[in-house]
Image 1 (cartoon, one colour):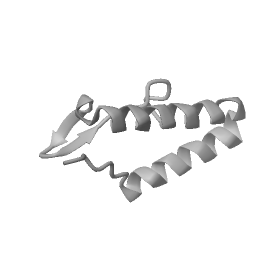
Image 2: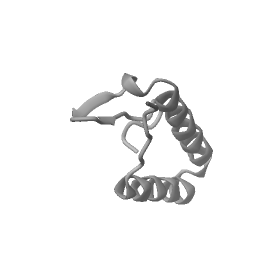
Image 3: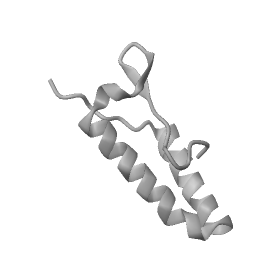
Length: 69
């Protein structure tokens, strides 16, 4: 069975808000933020169990470059 990657609506909103913030306040980092996000999602897809378990089968990970985003 293949693990399913689910990005919750609240996470999607946080991603949108963070990207908008970078575009408006630090545009030089906006592209890097998206690249870090894509790289993190790729890592999760290739090794889904690498992320920390927070509840039952729910896992969570942070971006490497933008951990507070």
